Image (cartoon, rainbow, N blue to C red; front, side):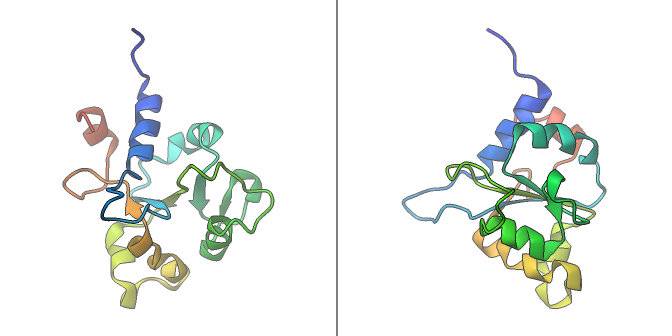
Length: 144
């Protein structure tokens, strides 16, 4: 049997972040991927080629499915014709340079993130079981 590649394992783990108990919870509207130190950034292009539901916070570059927070909100609402993915797939928002702590402190959240802060209440974070952000080392040494 063929072993999964690291990239395939990463994709599976991102998708698994959307798992929920349908007897007690609503499906997450989004998976938030915070990456304060931008350690995952080199993989984003390859991941986006495999995950049409992966959106990036950043400068407006719609061909890269990247934009500021209000663009991300519009993409999540499916109001942008050039950003589409299967309805069965939970959208993933990669937040380079952003920590979970920044989003959690809504009252002092940076202005450019405020429109995304409420997503933490309707979504799920891609984190380790401990609640910490994944690092490549932690991911590679875990069974996620």
